[in-house]
Length: 120
Image (tube, rainbow, N blue to C red; front, side, top):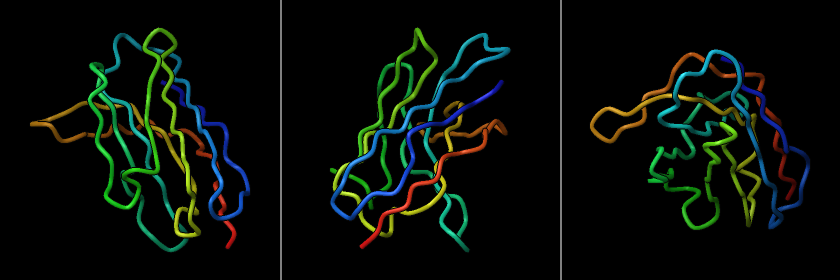
């Protein structure tokens, strides 16, 4: 499975970006899709995930500002990011995975990620 994320860039605080990520390769079916981010010197964290039924979850710091969505026909996941803050800076990665008791479980498919930099 190959994952390619697009849409990162440099934006001022308060601005918006839309990330997209297409999954390709040996895909039989995709359950969950998710966005993670990794800031310099920090561990990778789950930002948002979405199931095949469009059930979504967000980490508290992005609730009300970010929206995750997906196009199942295209095996693509999106992340709309509004009201960006400097602390949103990092490399954003998409992931395909599953769920266990409602908790997203990532696979080892990460792709290269896309850099998001928010200036103050």
